[in-house]
Image (cartoon, helix red, strand yellow):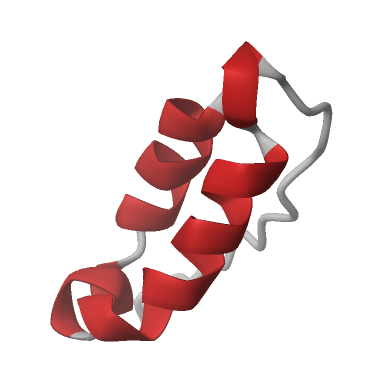
Length: 54
């Protein structure tokens, strides 16, 4: 997973577009960590909420 993949994942959450300035610092840090095409392995936890209508 490269930096573009990580940013795409973050962008999939609705609150990210509402508060983009909250991610400025973390994106700078990720830019440094993933410089020169470095990649990371990881899993993003996901919760699936199932509901039924009555």
